Length: 133
Image (cartoon, rainbow, N blue to C red):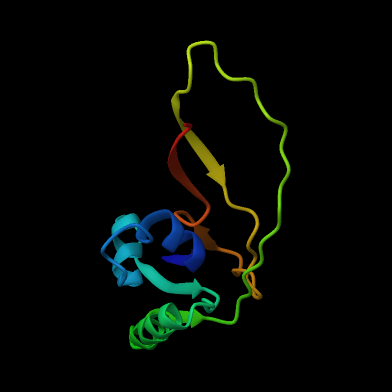
């Protein structure tokens, strides 16, 4: 049996933001990601968005998610940002290049941490392709 934790911010930013698809059955997603495990429970952690137009759509989506039997929605998270200062790199000798980078997401912690035995997958790492121009 698998217990699945989903970080809503990372799911949205990593998969759905630039996609025409905004509604996703999170239990079905968990079942497809873990075909060798039966799903015991899915916990979805998110924070409310500030944009009033987007917030209305998010509230409708969260209401729909709450109708899925194995899914628990925790929407009392807080979104914070901070500025990071990094040194400038010299320009590559042959100009700019597109690179594939891996990012580990450590900046958002839900108000309630997943219980032991929760399997963290898609919300922990995702690939981003960034053109450096």
